[in-house]
Structure formats: C-alpha cells, structure tokens
Image 1 (spheres, rainbow, N blue to C red):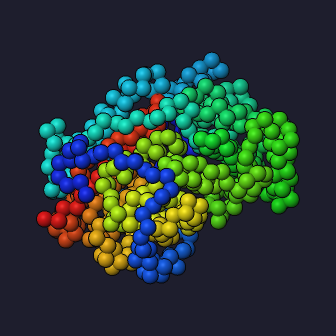
Image 2 (image 1 turned 90 degrees about the vertical axis):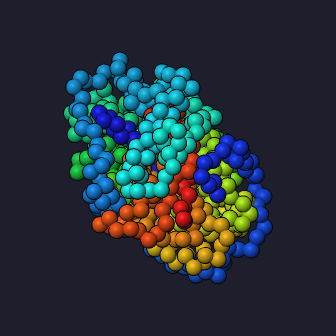
Image 3 (image 1 turned 90 degrees about the horizontal axis):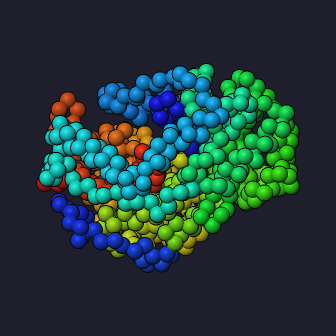
Amino acid sequence: MLRSRGIILTLTRGLRGQVSSNRLKRASLGPREHISTEPVVEEGLARLRGENVTQPKRETSEEHSLNHHPKDDSRKIRAARYVPLSIPITAETQHDLLAQHVTPLCQKPYHKQLNIKQQQMFKVLHTLGKRLAQVQAPIERTTKGLPCPLESPRPSPDVISYRNKDELGIRSGVDGNPKTVGFFIGRPTDPLMVSVPPTYLINMRDSHKHIVKSFQNFIRESDHRACHHFDDGGIWRNLVVRSTQSGEKMAIVLIHPQQLPEDGIHEIMDELKRFFTEGEGSSCQLDSLYLQACKQTKCTREQAPYRLIAGKKHITETCCGLDFRISPDSFFQINTGGAEVLYRTVQEIAEVSPITTLLDICCGTGTVSLVMAPHVRGTIGIDEVTAAVQDAGENARANNISNSTFIPGKAEKVLPQLSRLLRECSDVVAVVNPARSGLHPDVIHTIRQSTAISKLIYISCKPEGYAMENFVKLGSTLGPKNMKDKSAPFVPRYAIPVDLFPHTNHMELVILFDRVTN
C-alpha cells in the first residue's frame, strides 16, 4: 500500500572497515548448481522444524502499532498532515493526477530520477550518522560525513511496465459510477475521493490493464453492488493481478460475502468462471483465477481460503535462474528484473563463501535463501507466516536445492534456539528484508545477542521510516537507562541503493552492518 498525503493508492515489502571498490566485484549467480555439503547442523534444525508452527495471531492496526513500535520511536516519525481534496477531479484531469501521484518522477529522464534518489539516500545516511552518534555507536565517518560509504544507485533493467503485481480497489469514478476499478485519489473519508482506472500508467503492464477493464465490465453487469463500506451490503471489493516474465497471468477477486450463503458464493464463482473462460474475459487468457471471501480488511489464507475458480493453482516466475511458485498471497518483489539486481547486490556485499551459513530472517517464500544457497554451506530461513515457509520449502524442492532449511515461527523465539547450533558454524551472515514497518525491537535485540552472527545485511524499502529505528538500535552502545549494553553493536560499513521502483520516489537500500567486537 503506497500512501501519499492527499492520496491513497493501493498498488498492491566479511567487509571490514573501509570497503574498496576492488573488493566489491560482481559475482555471478549460477542457475541451479550448488555446493554439495552436509546438511547444516541437521539434527538441531530437524527438531526446530517441528516447533513454532502456530500461525501468528492477526493483529489489528492499533495492536501492530503498539506491539511493533514503542511510543518513544513513534514520536520520531510523524506522518504529514493529510490535506483533503479541494477541487473535484474530472475526466480531463484524472489520468494526469493519477500519474503525478503514482509515478511522480515519470516526466524526468531516468538518469535524473536516479540522481534524485541518490540525494534522498544521502540524506537518510546523514540522518543515520547523527542518530548513531547520539547513542555512542562506534562509527567512523566518511569524508562526506556519512557513517559509511554510499554507492550510486543501481538501476532497474526495466523501467516501463515492470510491475508484476497490482492491487486495485472499487469506488465511484469521476462519472459517478460506483463500480469503477482503479486506484484511489483521496481518502475514503474525503467526499471528493474517486477511483481512477490505470489506463495510462507507464509502470503497469498492458495485460494487467486489460484484466482490470474486463473485470470492471463484469461487475457493472452484475446484480451485486460494490462494497464501499463493510456495512453497505455490497460484495465487490478488490482485484489483484499478478503476472510473470513468461506471460503467465493470475487474477484474485476479493469479495465481502455479507450474508451470502455458500451456494451464493459458488454462484458468483461460476459466473466469474464463465466470463473469463467463455465470455468477454476469455481474451485476458488467465492462467489462474481465484476468489477470496473476506469479511475483514485483510485475511490470511487460514482465515479466508483462496478458492480456485479456474486454471492452475499457481504461476511460476523465474529469477536468477531459479523457478519460484507464485500463489495468490506469495510475497515476491514487484520488479523481477530489479529483484535480480537486488539479490546479486546482496551476494556481493555479503562476501559469502562455501563455509558461510546464511540466516534469512523474514524469509517469505525463500527467494534470498534459494538464490544464495549455491554459494554457501547452507541457509536457514525464518518466517512467522507458516504458509510462506511451506511455499519456501516447495520452491527449494522444485529447484533441487537441498542445503536450505525453513523454520516457521517468530525470529525472536527461533533465534535463541539456534544459538548453540550457530556457534558450531565458522561464518554466519544474516539477511533481513522486513516490510516497511521494519523489525520488531525484540528481533533486533535477539540478533545482537546472537554472538555467532558476524555480519548483517539489512534490505529496506523505506529506510527513512521505522527501519531507521532498527539501524539505531543495532548500533547503540546505550542500554536501558543509559546503562552499557553487554552485546556487541553492529555498525554500517557500506550502503548500496537499488532501484526497483522507476518513476516513483521509492527504492531499496541495502546496508552491510559489521559487528564491532573490540
């Protein structure tokens, strides 16, 4: 969910000391061959795989805010004040306004976009340097006053139609039609908010736009109303479209079941199947069509299962020579070409070797683990979402990778159980790639207490947000009440921006943190 003030857009996240460019040589990621080794501390991992398999309780937004971000941290990151729309959006202005909000840099040449993002990342690191100094982190500033060297942004290989996933809502359009499928300009509480079709967005694939248009035609012919509010009796809520580089396409229709009996839901599924396999929608050539009947803002597959209407259970994306199964709720970077650049950057900056054990915290469906597996002794992925861990295991088997283990559970509970096993490993590198909300403070504390971890690579799509608090806690030498923390801190050694979101203000920042033991 991209949020901008004045708009809500549902678009669907051993280097030591000074690093020289000679040491950051680009490494080639081989396709499927991997180093043949004994399973990584297999006995202990087998025991752990049987533990912590309970699906985490879904938190409300209020609970998430309280549990994941302490009050003293939340005061440091203040949301800009929302300014309601003052002028009605018209048919003539809607597409230009949508482009300005979704792709605000689209009018600038790509090299200038990268310059702008480089300046943004410079400011982020400059702020980080100040914050680390306040907590007495043992940093050594560069000649530019940064806490570590900052490389120029690595560009996306694709800058047009690069998005492999889009999530669209249903509200009234500029013509007043309540069944307009698109992105929202304004907030739901704003009387001037409208839904604008993605007709001219340059970062969205034409195949996605075609599916959106066909689905809009379908619901406009439907007797059921759109669900603008949960209590208004409507059912049509959202549409998610996913696709792969090979052209496979998946659509997920989200409805609010209201008081519909099971037979009523099946009737809707039958109508969708006829439309997309025999009717107008057949031109979309969908490979997979799902429906989810969810009564909450968002439901896990356990709370509201995804119902296969037609086609295959999943589509398959290829990244770094590996095949990844894409299910309706699988996390996968929205820019596949950019993801390959990102994962090569992680491998390069981590300087892994055949004796390295890689800890993949927040592993999701296992992309980082499996891409790195051929180059390390073994990988251990941890994620609190059981379904994601199951998908990761399937992806490992599909790619004939045997030196990757995936454990369901919260990182702050799993890592202490791994401590003894990790101490038997000669080189342990951790990679974290959390959502925009960053890592829970308990996870940061647990990472610092896990003395076997010598390096940490933090991938953040919003480093100026709550991830900044994670960076500060990693480097702090001040414990509660200004008492010295006994655990050795991690300090930033090198930072590389990677652009996965051309034409927007967003990008990924990869930071190498080294543990300071002296």
